[in-house]
Length: 329
Image (cartoon, rainbow, N blue to C red; front, side, top):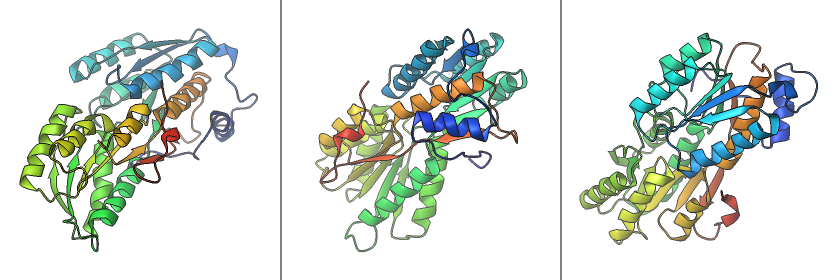
């Protein structure tokens, strides 16, 4: 978002550590010091039990075990009221670092500001609040939205012989990924008047709701060319609706996601066609590294939010399909 300041992209943990230490004026070893042993980290994700957050937690635990600090995971289980309560309780416990996974740009903004004002460093993972904090690790949603929109124009736009009709299925209209990707995508579509967005309905992250939305759109627009789902998990429902309607050869199903082996299977099975993966396994390593640095007192000299952008992988059906792009738990 506009208030973030992205640091140079770190493609490996060692590079991240060395670069971040140099950028923040930290001398000495590029590894976490033993003085972070005994410190406390609390992670509040939107939900556990999904590969995205399980992958992050696994990597963060590896760092915690290696350097002797605690990591406590509090599962909000897709309940937004529960999430604000869990974050409020976490703040009262005064952890050294609070890691949050924002369901919307606004929900946790007041609490993030409160935590930071009380000396708790907040790391936001993948979905940003409109409230800046000590650090962010995650995808470049503007880039993803732009690249998918450009690919849709190529496949469905002028000269393609297709209708140009597109359905967008966000998870939440006010989630950071959906806000930024929609803004980027519509900027592209506005330059190509033959592209018509016929639906932009949120699924609330639920595959069944995405399936129902897609089934209705296909009834209303049987010549639909593409679906842009904002998360591969709920887009499974959209892809299955396309298959059920006998439209798998006519409608391209795009999504984004953490890129685990379930994503590759979806492409292999023809449920989704193209997935922009931000590699949740790599994000977990970067989040663990950022926690190590924050526990050592890392901060940007100008007070801005430290930010590490996740490398992008495109999992694509057809001749370019590469199963090695996906990771396994």
